[in-house]
Amino acid sequence: MRFRHPDGSLVHLAYCTNVHPAEDLGGVIAQLDGCSALVRKELDVPVLGVGLWLAYELAEQLANSSDALHRLRHALLRNGLEVVTLNGFPYAGFHDEVVGKKVYLPDWTQPERLHYTRNLVDVLAQLLPEDAAYGSISTLPLAWRSPWSVEQDTLARAAVSRLEMHLARTEESTGRRIRVAFEPEPGCVIELVPQGAEWLSPYGAGGRIGLCLDTCHLAVQFEEPASAFASLDRAGVPVVKSQVSAALHVADPGDAEARRLLAEFAEPKFLHQTRERGGGGIDNLDALDQLEGSDAWRVHFHVPVHAAPRPPLSGTTDVLEESLAQLVGGAHPRTLHLESETYTWSVLPSSPRDTAELAEGIAGELDWLRSRITGLGLEAL
Image (cartoon, rainbow, N blue to C red; front, top):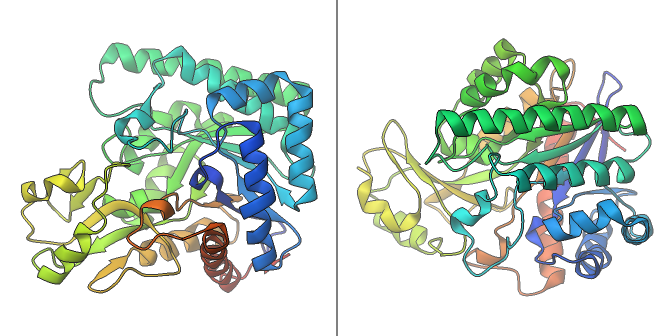
């Protein structure tokens, strides 16, 4: 969806297609013709944004085959879909039976990560609508937190410098500005926004490398949005895109009903990093006994923003709304790219039964976000 900011800027809202399992071109096109088309119909909008997730083999194919790229572009056009952003975090296998820490591989010390991201840059430069100010690609926060050495950090910096050069060459050769956004996540080398601001500060002046602010991750770490944005401002690091999502909140871990309901979210496919306010943290819900339970918990489980979990559990939509006001509610937007990224529909305690029900849920999230964005003074187009 598209919105006009009072300053004249065009702000885009998309949903991330990493919720869908396909990794080949035929499967991705089927998803666009199916679920994505249903979402646009449900919302009754002229253009629906999709934040494409392209597994590495498909990215390689699209970057090197004009025929494959034409097929994808045609599928987008016939369904009234636009692509201004890509999710370049998962490399492949995001819908394996168990994903876990595999999602962080290859990391930014490995040449495969740079090669994959370059392919995404080349593809997005060809898909970007003419009136989009720039294209964005979100990527992982360097690596899982350990092991991480000075040598690895040096390798990652060298890779990002080469990426920055590729972005500059792409802009010069195509006239399209593509930017890459590193996404802080609990448990990773960059897990807090101030850490991202510090690591990314050498690249901020160029504007091509910046931060992806995931409001679910921000909430899990109990970071205050105002402080997080202030750290970015001090470092001169831009918010290239934001994934506007909600985490699972447990106000009283000692509440027996809360613990019973929380157990329904304990599933093996994805990591569910959990943090206690003012206390420790764990990497998954199977280790809750390691937390003191003396204050609130937040869980890295993306819950639908428009449908709160059953009480006494809740979602961190308050953090999302406060962040959204900072992102697009001021005199000028901090970012032009917003993306709904609830990829956990298939592992929710009450998961959608079919494509129609999934489309209805995605549309519900986007409609909820639309109402909040227009409530900040932006005009829906």
